[in-house]
Amino acid sequence: MKRVIERTDFSVICGFRNQQEQDKAYADGRSKLKWPHSKHNTSPSLAVDVIPFPVDWDDIDRFKELAAVVKEEWSLMTETERLRYELVWGGDWATFRDLPHWEIRFAEGKNPPKLRS
Image 1 (cartoon, one colour):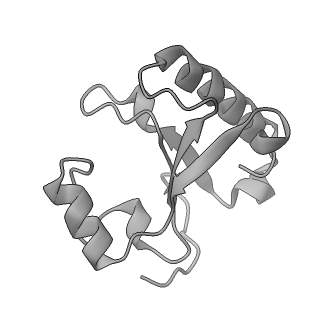
Image 2: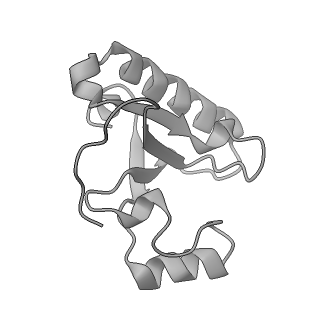
Image 3: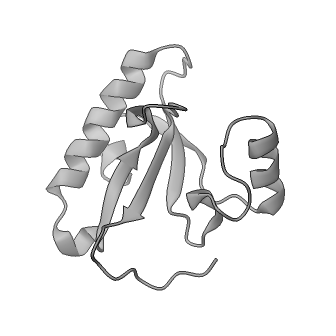
């Protein structure tokens, strides 16, 4: 995201969620996962929610434009910089499309780095 902000304007609206925040996100229908199963519930967080500027929740094209920049910057990173992770955008999900959501998942067949939960 540090590289992306140099190319397009956006705001991080959520990174790490503690148990209370995750329980609320689940209760409000903003998350399908209960504590501590969200990528937002690790430290450091493996997920971030971002919104493009100017803020317009209904402007799907702006989310797609931001997604294109994020994906391009990810593709330009070296394998070492990616730390054996793969990038996942909630806008690509078939169900529960989550346009602000980005997460890194551990790539299959690789050993994950140690994280605190």
